[in-house]
Structure formats: C-alpha cells, structure tokens
Image 1 (cartoon, rainbow, N blue to C red):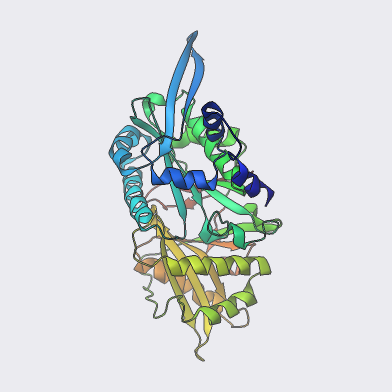
Image 2 (image 1 turned 90 degrees about the vertical axis):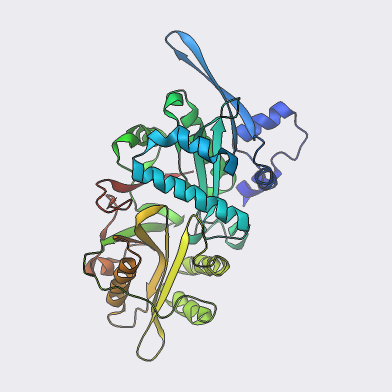
Length: 398
C-alpha cells in the first residue's frame, strides 16, 4: 500500500502554485484533486512548455492539460480526425458519447474511465489521452484497491484513446502525455500498464514510442494479475452460420451464491477474491446503460439444474469483438468446456460480433481443443469485419 499512501499524501504540505503545477505535471495527483477537477473540468489542471531545437532554433510548445468536458468534444474530434481511418474515428466519437453518459450517472462501472486533453493557451484542443482502471479484469483502481491485498493482486491500468493533432506532432506533446499517464498510474499503485492498439500504418510512430518506452508486445502478459499470475488470452472467429445462443439466464443477485461456489472451485484464491469484487461492480452497472464498456453475462445449467458454466463478457469501443473477461466451467462435468466454448461463439453471433476473445489466469489448452487459438500474435478483425489490421497489446511493468 506504500505507493497509494504516498499518492494520498502528495500535495498536503504547503506548496507554491509553481510547485503544485510541477507536481501535477509529474502525474502526482491525489484522489481528492482528481475528484475536485472532474467537478469543474473547464478549468485546466496545469500548464507546461516543451522546448525543442528545430532547424537551429528553439521550438516552444506551451499547452494546458485538463479533463475532457462536452464543450471541448467537437473541437477535439476535428483536430485529431486524421489520426485514424474513418471506422476507427467513428468508434472514438461513439466512445466519447458513451463516456459522457457514464459520467453523468456518477455510479461505479466495470471500467473506470478518465479522458484528458491538451489545449493551446487559447483553449483550443489538439490532443487526447485516456486512463482506464480495469476493474473488470482484476486490476483495480479507486473502486477496489482497498478490498485487495496489493502484495498478491496487481493493479492494472490501460491507456485510453491517445492522439495528437498532425500540426502538433513531433513537438514532444505526445511523448509528454504518454509519460504523464504512466506516472499517474504509478502514483496510484498500478503495477502494470497496458496499451491496446493495432498495426494500422498510421500507428507506426506510436508503436515506435511504445518500444522506446520499454513496452513489450504480446497479449499474454507475465505477472499481470499478481506475482506469478500470468494473463493468457485466446480467441475464436465466429463462422458464418454459427447458431445463435440466447441465454435463458444471466449472472444475477439470484444466482450469486451458487456462482460463487463454482468460482471457488475453479479459481485460485486470489482470482476468486477478484471475482467477488467484480460481481459487486457488475450488479451496480446495469446491462443496456450507455457506458464505455457494456456488460453481458450468461450461465449454463446441467440436467440437474446446477450451474455448470458461466461467462461475464464486455463490448464497447471495438465494433466486431466481444471479450469474455470472466468465465469458467465445472472441471468435474464432462464436456463442460466444450459446451461453454460453443455458447461463447453462439452468444457472440447473437451480438453480431465476428470475434470472441477470452482472458485467463494461466494457460488452458482445452480452449485450443474447442476451436480457440492463441492470441499472442494479435487478433484479426477486432475493429470491424474485414478489417485487415491486428489487435495488439503492449505492456510494461511499472
């Protein structure tokens, strides 16, 4: 807990405005400061200036960093439009709409999301960065950090949408924002930083930045959940003609205790604790509410009426993929893993998704035997059907 305690103590001693500006620019914000800023996001957090030599002359870029509010959305989208192809840009626009809806409710969600922007001194936006605390996947953040032993459970942070207007590229602002988010994550106690991206040709500069910053590629991440607890990912394409699976039962308060009994049987003690925390968040965020990440779930029962398998899935951001972030089958029930694999594909078909991705603590070759493939080299067609780019992850230990 030492890093989180230091994070809370930061800024509580007397400091000048210049010292405070420097501290915030270093990513050392207290939870109280973050909450206060989001109450008044139209004011800026801090100002900064980057000086680079170009053509024998000093190039100065002075900018302000602030939380993204609705008044800045249209100007921001216009400034960063050239950073992606059109389908991806539309996904960004839709994500921001859902983001504002999620913030208005002021209730816990499966994904805690913050977006920050850089503006010039005339308050014109030209860059965006995001920070996701991944509650649903066991890495926590404010919502769950006090409920888990941080010696056993790593907090994980993901970089949200990240782009700089073409006219400001090369001036160092992108690198600054990238490092700033990483420092914020570290100050909060995060042990792992993850970047979701693709191999689209316009992403090459960003991929180079990740490599230079010490990030490694691969969807399998060592020690992601905690010491000795690796994240391993699999994926399956949903073939045309796959029979739609419409669940008759979802994960709910009614089947909570029975579900926990099965989870205790199939998960490690640490993973089970994370699952309990996840259920609290799942029950607070209702299916169908506009949010950056949308929850889905189902359970499968055997002939005796007992829960045999289950899955908690998420959609959002990516048009053609659904992610099973929690799933499990009774190891004593013959064929349960096969039935779950088929249900995952069938549910994805019903949601009009062409790819289903699932993440595990540790390897599980039974998924390979049931139509899934290793995802470590990337996942195809996540962003849209027919999209030739590969979905990639880059990660770094903080």
